[in-house]
Length: 275
Image (cartoon, rainbow, N blue to C red; front, side, top):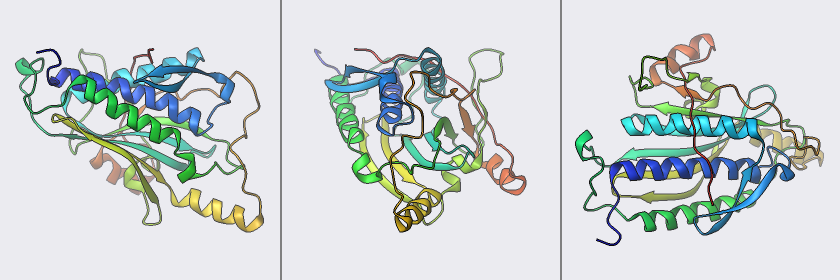
């Protein structure tokens, strides 16, 4: 068969690679770092932007590797890229929502799934995701000038699950602050859907959540006539220090954290954006 349906492992690898490409694109589009820190590349037959700062790339690739390991277990509910201010307050959450459509036995994970889409079709879907993502500023607007923004990466696991690890070493995740996770979203937050794909194996959707804090600041800035761009960082090739570790959010831990306002549960990952 010239272009067979996807296998479980191919689907996980494809989604993992796409998440890495998308993270770089998010940082560029939302102006988290200066534009000259990024280089224009091509992926899925569409232009994308990739960071060229080694420390930042190491952090992202490490996080994505760990995300891929968790995706293989079927434990992941959401991958969250959090845009936050200097006080660690979440302003935007980019949500990669994962839904496993089928359960595959370990010995069948390299066997094509009859009703799954092909690898070529998946690439076209990812192209659509990235095209929509490149235009997201028209929906979100520019960041409020007063926010010195940064980002972090978190995963939200299914209830009662903990990060898996291939060896005896502890998983590379650290506890996530509940404020950075979807459980902290208020009724006043606004959700914008970017795109979704049903592979026949794993459903993936991408949405952007504007927090109530961000929306309130925008209203106040508009009232004062001070709404501006996200250019709070000096035009330098050196970004602010990347986060130390990606984070993981566990539902049960989140309930405990709500009481004492301390972090929850976490981990890290690796891959690179190719041509």
